[in-house]
Length: 164
Image 1 (cartoon, rainbow, N blue to C red):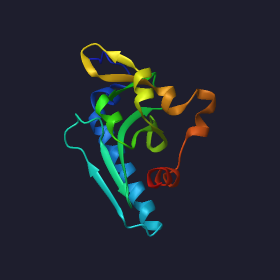
Image 2 (image 1 turned 180 degrees about the vertical axis):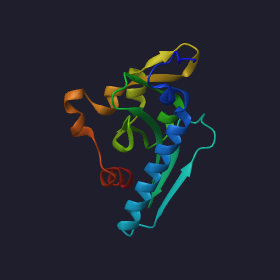
Image 3 (image 1 turned 90 degrees about the vertical axis):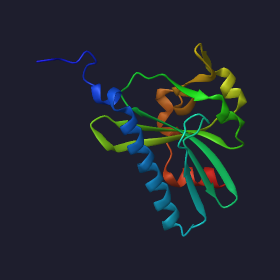
């Protein structure tokens, strides 16, 4: 019997694209459901088919347009940084949306939404073979572990941030 060299979290690593797609759809569904419940029908969600512009989603509500880079991670992972493309900071309203999930239950997750700008970009660490990409610390998005619950956001809070 062959054993994996990756360990207990093989599927998180080997099937990360599928997991990220699941969470992208969960976020879009929750966001649009909230808009529906609020009778806000002036909303557009656009997905980036080519991942070289720094964002995954474009969300327009009323006359506000926001660019979101989605990041997905398990709560108990040791991931401490996320790659962010330089093009994201050149968008007027750009954000990192981190979705942190419980490893054994993809329905248990929390949101963290953090604006990204030139200052936060320059604080990131450069990647040698990817000159237009910086590593942004997870704590930049979530805050320190002791304060993470303060930074967690609901769909209503995210809607408000993206709408004002």
